[in-house]
Image 1 (cartoon, rainbow, N blue to C red):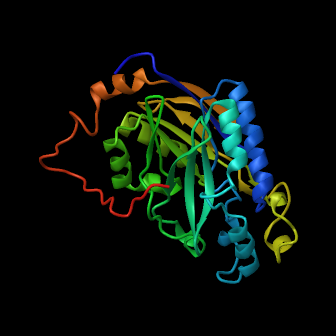
Image 2: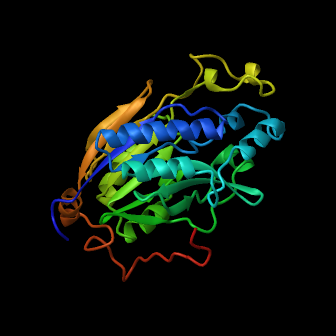
Length: 305
């Protein structure tokens, strides 16, 4: 492996135009343009940034949200087709990669996913969250098809685990076994424990970890949704304050956390640090015992998108 590899990553912590796909995609385009102008090679967005995270599930009586779900499903992304064209054009024009958190609609099922768009504007990969968490199961299905996806960005291997997938030890191990250099962790988790989680993973895997969280208030919710005024307040009603952080192999924080304000967090990742870290601890190399412990990954459901 040659030395001197670098990748500049920008994680975007801003509010989407909640439950408005086209307006949110324009926000994505604007942020991609800004990040590229500042030298980013990869631009990352939060979990289900398009069309927004279904926060009402944690506040609403279950199964009484039919109009909310109908709008959410209508504004979801169909990956095969023209919906992503604005972002694909922006990525191509800027010559950058984009990792975009979306709610994907495939047939009659919605998935929590990350779609990768390469610097030529092509869809280069898709990762679907393996298991929605708690109330999320009322809108998203278990990830099938493309799940443990890894993409190659000019020789840098990048993968994603969404939110609490990062607490699944075998999912992390599967990513390490694919030789990732950078783990993307878009999330809705605003807890005090989240940044230490990112730091643990960076040390455990000797990888860079980029966590990105949304910035959303109750005032961002459209008031034409039934009951919105009853379950959401204004600017002081936080849905997500953010927690966006970039961590180096070994667990040291490179940038962030950004909390309580919109913005971006950026860092230039020196990939030689991955090699140096794995001299001491390589979880799938010299610090493993495959004669005793092994992981089997069932890829029979995977397919190209």
